[in-house]
Length: 206
Image (tube, rainbow, N blue to C red):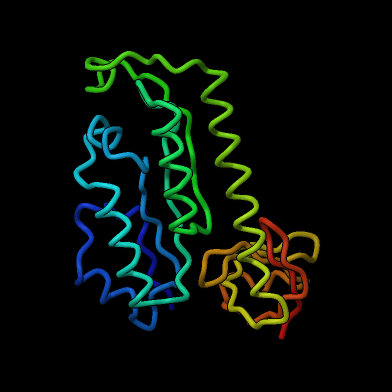
C-alpha cells in the first residue's frame, strides 16, 4: 500500500523521480540529504551539487507535490567551516522549510578523504552550539508544521501496540499514537488528530 524511498541522492534526482513522487502509493514524504548549505563546504565534502541546485530541486518537488513533507541530513562543524558558512546552512533550512533534519557534528574518520585532506579544526563546544541552533530551529518548525493536522484525518500504518496504545507513521512519516488493540498491527488505520505535539500526533480512530 505504500512506496517509500530512503535517502535519495540530490545529484541523481531528476524529473523522472519527481514524476514518480505523485504516484498514488508513494508516501507523502521525501528524505533528501543536503549535508550543508554552503557551496565551498559542499565541494570539500565531495558533494556533486550546489546549494542553488539543491534549492531548485526542492522547488520542483514542491511544485509537483505541494503538500509533501521533506526531511534532510546535515553535517555541522565540517573542517574549516566558518560562522558565515554555518549560517548559510541555517538559511538553507529556513528557505527549504524542512519537516525534520538529522544533524550530526562532524567527527574525523581515519582513512577517509576528508581526514587525509583537511584538519578537524572546529572545537567540540562550537560544534555542539551549532547542533543546538539547528535543533532549536527544527523543533520550532516541526511543531508549527504539525498544527495543520489538528482535527484532520490521517492514515497510520500501525507497527506496534503496547498497553493499549497503538503507534505508527502517517503518509508524511509523522509518528502518530492512538488507543487501540494489537490486532491493528500491520493495518492502515484512519485516525482523527486531537493533539499535535512536536514529535507525535495523537488522535482517535476515525
